Length: 427
Ligand SMILES: Cc1cc2nc3c(=O)[nH]c(=O)nc-3n(C[C@H](O)[C@H](O)[C@H](O)COP(=O)(O)O)c2cc1C
Image 1 (cartoon, rainbow, N blue to C red):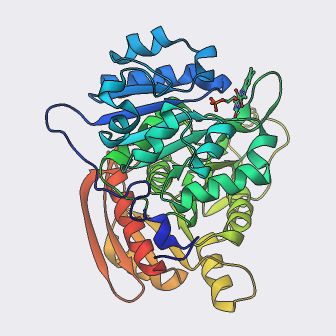
Image 2: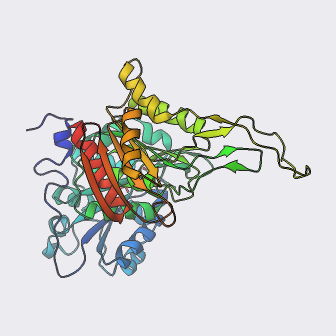
Image 3: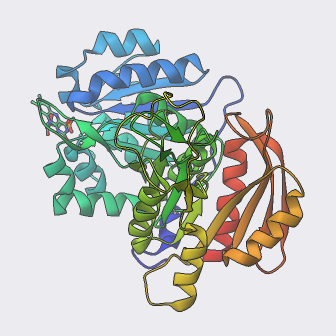
């Protein structure tokens, strides 16, 4: 029996969430139970339901009785094409309080109220949803949404920790507008991003990164020339966002430092937005203080203008003025150095990315030796390669001489291989 709170327990103990391999009926798409509890964000679950049904999932919606105050039973029944019940006393001959959970490939509760998290953590079985949560042996995803005070309350923190220890994936809520005029952490992430987590979990990946705190940098920095112009690069942030998304789906707590990315926020990652290399450095050094691993996927400018003009540079002079540049700090090398010196909190595993156009592997090896990181993901960039594309190919070089080839495929697949290598080093 694993110790309470150990990562072993987090992987899904016998009888806990995700204890069984994802089940496939073969006859139709995966069976998903969509639990909906009584948060103001219940209406957003309609969009999640649509995304699930339109991608071939068979969805049974199990709202709480209170949730029906926000969105009514006919909406769930019509959108899912399935009967909807909140209690255990409907269609008793079909034993729904047991069968719905037993037959599910995935249970996702979105939004999950403070109340439903508490009931699930305590193992209560006072409605159809909590019965389903007790009988399900498939992966379970909770997407909490509530006011910041409720989310930060020690009772909710303890309930979330309990659910995570049992193998459930509890997605961190987003920061933004809450009920009424207030803002803060507690907002339900974008339904499309919750759907991505569900898709990843259904793909068979276990919550094997549960308990790990990971930092990812993504996007490309911008170095201001004047209030209008900047020196930038072509990084879209797709690879870094794929790293964040896959880590969340595998149960990790992720801080994503994003430089000028316009993609939807990945569900569950704590997002820190930055613009320049100096801002990215500060954000990464702050985030890594309490982390197990960092993956630096952002394209960080090597140089910045020595001075930023306070007003727009005019083209009045006949010849353009040169823009003197100064070197930016080398964040990856700094992380490696901090760890070597051991006088600042530093993650156990440091991963860098190297975008190269020529002599890709030779340059990658030289960079790995220079930076003092554990793994370097080397990819060739250029016209139609890596930047802004949904797929990528790379070679991962390890400090001890390992070399792992990742063939061209979705950036999520590459991300999974990187996390596999990180997890192996952390184990
Ligand atoms: C307008 C309104 C909005 C609410 N929004 C939330 C919410 O976002 N998150 C939450 O945890 N509770 C929220 N609550 C409180 C829950 O509805 C309440 O705790 C309820 O008992 C939860 O029931 P359930 O967990 O069985 O669905 C809200 C209540 C009201 C009246």
